[in-house]
Image 1 (cartoon, rainbow, N blue to C red):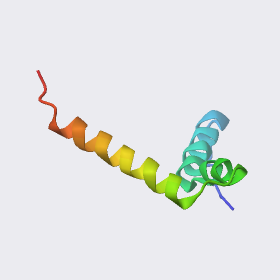
Image 2 (cartoon, one colour):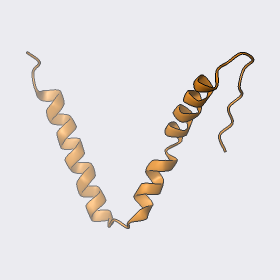
Image 3 (cartoon, rainbow, N blue to C red):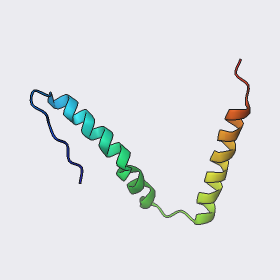
Image 4 (cartoon, one colour):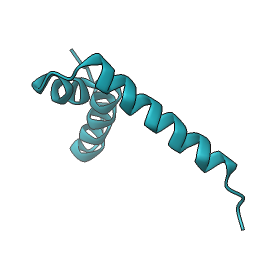
Length: 64
């Protein structure tokens, strides 16, 4: 459970923004979406490898 203490004089918008940041950091929504449909481990591994190759290629490209 996420607890946000609202300070005296703090606007509701700021408190809501802090709540949204904390909620996003927990990764609840990401996990919920991943559990909606089962994905085989081999496919998950393939996605991870593709992502790693992409990140590696991004680091190799020279910046102009």
